Image (cartoon, rainbow, N blue to C red; front, side, top):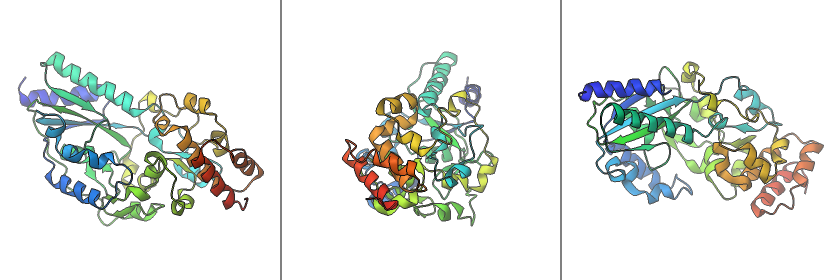
Length: 350
């Protein structure tokens, strides 16, 4: 196989393995590196210190994996079919909203296995080669690489948008020393004058087109942050207990999005519309059981209770709500106690 033929086969094999799109690009990310440095300089990474610690490995693939010549970028749809409509859950103050990407099995595991199968297929059908597979597992500018590989453009909310599939998908990569045929980058930006994602953001975290201040972002506050959630954002969080999808839900391009065909991404344990009180009643053993194989587990039980306490503070005042919060007033965790106290104060209980 020559360079062109191999590249075509890689894309076909990727589709056969369940990816919806496969593109190939170079390691060139000069402009994106300048953007990254400016973003870090402004401190918009919050407490994600690893963003700075990794240095330029994020924007220089060859520094991360020496010998890398080409990057294979892959996307996989994840929106779960038969799940309760997100807007209905967000409007119901008794329910907890969990980001739609976390409904089923942890995507890191599923996608990494599929990407590894693709790499093995290349070795079997072509020859052994140098490579590393990634799914949010290393410092990578995955959206910039996907854009350069022709998979879509980076929208004003900073997520990648595909004109035929919206933005409800995961990305993964193979860094390789194979000299592959490079795809045409997606240079057009189709957001136009639309600012729907900027306007809808509950905490005004999208401070400019393609610029998110993580310190204000609900996904960061409920997933990445390990300390107390700043009080100024707690009311704005509403019932979002794990992540936030508002900017994607409002995006007009998602009318083209397709539901996932992956069984493992389907809703588990009723997490598409669970009751706040029921989740708050989970013991740590129950939390670990119900989040087994899920991306949710990585935030840990303490942060899970912290997030739910905020959700209950924003819920309708009922005896059930008050009793659930009161039951955790003496929780072993100082952070949980603090958020429970805040929640009770919202219901004028001290």
